[in-house]
Image 1 (tube, rainbow, N blue to C red):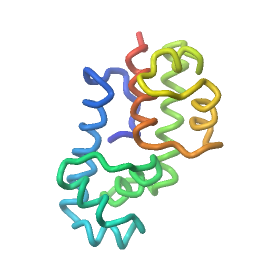
Image 2 (image 1 turned 90 degrees about the horizontal axis):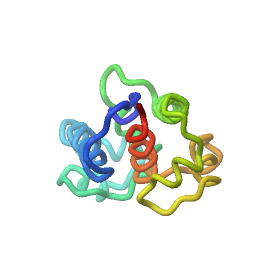
Image 3 (image 1 turned 90 degrees about the vertical axis):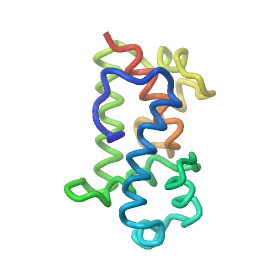
Length: 141
């Protein structure tokens, strides 16, 4: 699950995202894109693309809505909070500040944006989350 604390990561952010998308696609497959769309308010086309193994544009909140459909999972808001708290914990463990995270990112985000998104003062895409999580876990001792 993407919101768990990561101390190790795949070979690349793309591999990490694919791992998470496989988990989300399993949920969509099991419940059906139409049912997931009805329960989350997300577009069916994007859910069908996810089920086909594609990488649709998702926000962190949308990924959390899908994850929350699994039995025993917390609500979407809690999943987002846990995911972002784990980023902060990972930064603390790896002794990284937002400038260090920025220098490790393979996407264009500055330190201020990273901080705003981790603090939930700005929306975060799932792609951004995966890249930040990757940079933090890759820098962990």
